[in-house]
Length: 168
Image (cartoon, rainbow, N blue to C red):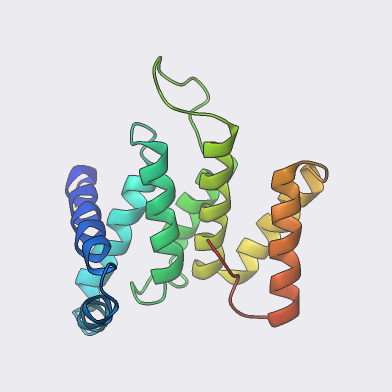
């Protein structure tokens, strides 16, 4: 499936679940319906969210939001252990924003940090050990910034509960 079609699927998913999130009962009903849908459709949604996140021309906030949703939905989307998804997320962690942004692109260190952090959370959902290794690698490169502090907190949460990585 082409990238534009995947982004369309991802956007439609975000619209539907974003609107449903205003009413908890509607959101829960929609989420249960999604959980019970065909695996191929759930995987397509996951790939759609990833397609939005990896497209540098997309709004950085939309990219970060797509990663946030993907990080929480990796298992439901059937993407756990998917090496291609893991590889794309790792590339995104390494390069969250384009090296040579176009004039007018709304990019700053905060946007890059949000995209990197959320891509790392999604990566941990796809392959926990690889995500933790990438987290340790990032901590080895930077130990003093505010972003490094967030990474240390994430690492501590992962070490303490051996499960859920926490907030996105």
